[in-house]
Length: 57
Image (tube, rainbow, N blue to C red; front, side, top):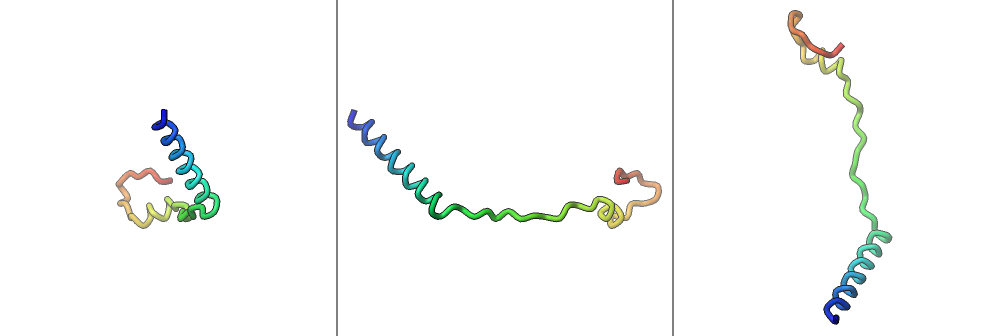
């Protein structure tokens, strides 16, 4: 019974420390917005031959 009590107390302490950290110093996102791909420009840059088939436009 004592082991369960100590385990529960350790869990509560760890959960409290976790949430205290998340509320005071939340992690910052490093996500960035990228411009959308321009498929037509990529196709022209690839310079496919006139007889080659490609699926762009």
